[in-house]
Amino acid sequence: MDELLHYTVGLPEITLAPGDTVVREGEAGGGLWVLVSGVLEISKAGTSINSISKPGAAIGEISLLLDSPISATVTASTTCIVRHASDGRAFLMSDPAVMRAVARGLAERLHFVTTYLADLKNQYGDSPGLAMVSHVLGQLAHRQGPPAQPGSAREPHPDY
Image (cartoon, rainbow, N blue to C red):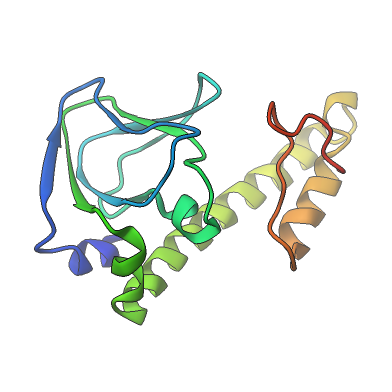
């Protein structure tokens, strides 16, 4: 992810105070933010799901790549500095190396999530609440074709 920092030198830097919102779940995307320093909190449907502290982490890239609304709310947990490309799509398309850096960051996150799910299955695979882990792992590993339609409040009856 540090690779992305290299490509964002020269973009406007914004200092965020603790509690400032970078992007809000459900809103229209368009921009791309890259963390320079600090800690950002990610939440979905009001529930904190992760934090980001790695310089070079991208925010808003999922919305740009999927042509969809922002998928999670991101707020500053500490004082943060982010670099901002207001036209994220143009920035991503400006250089294949930029797109590769974003793809690498997404691949790292996917690898982490699938490894975590596999660990859950190994530890708690016989628990009734985790019966769907094998199916989720299969979907993550082999999903090709049309964009995923996640099950959520927007789509209460997913086909998984």
